[in-house]
Length: 363
Image (cartoon, rainbow, N blue to C red):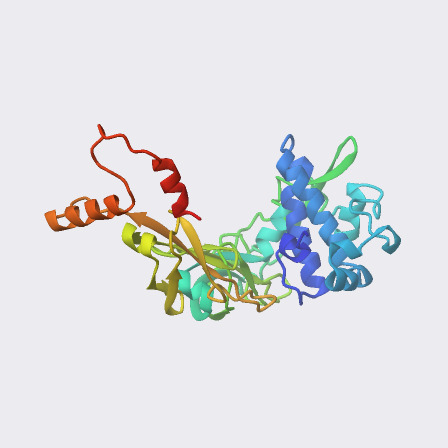
């Protein structure tokens, strides 16, 4: 079953505005006109539209949360595609409010994106981090206009709209005005404080709580901690998590994997050993006659899912090792063991029924 929340990159408690904002960014990123000939982007674009169609509708979302995708049958009005919109342009008009729509530059100018590195266990168990970053603040000297006289002129090319409409057959797309860079105004007398940009850089620190169980690539949102808009309101700060790899453990979803070497005699005889887990040491039993690379499961020693709160498992891969050197006493013991199974080291001696003997070991 597809996870529509994961597809849009939001949590299960996300508000409609959060879902709309997430969809908007992804729709701009994967739109076919921006990725011509890219089949993967086309499929991604379809997938995010299906996810938005469900999560933006309170009734469909409630059914999805309760019954999953299977509960969204034909009778529920779920199209599994784009039947709710006449075409892709209608999707953009619905989400962006019609007219010119929005450009990717708008998103970059408003919201702020940074990356935060985490250790392997910090992501698993959660932690608190203080992040230092730089954001754009409105220049007080020119009141954010970029003009020394505080009177920028209307851009003659786009007539102050900041965007130019371009029709490409089926689509009506929007291009940022190259004359005013999307601002809708041009500056002839640049402000000396901000060099005509209308904003200055400011440094800030923010304390972030990292939830337990997050994984590499997860993005957290800090409300009103991004760049300052023209109305003095702050946009949002998005923090993308980059988790460092561990030298022992490998994470796959909510499960943990580790490779542990054991001696061939332990595999043959079976035994109990202690192995490391992300929470400490645990005892496991090696089954008699274990095969090389066999997995042993330790239930409930994986990662706690940040959404369901269910804990995954740890899988121990047992790799059978053989010594590079053995002493004379060990050689004699192994010879006796061989002989006890009816195996003779002299290749010239006919070994009657040897295959029957070997087969009997596995009964």
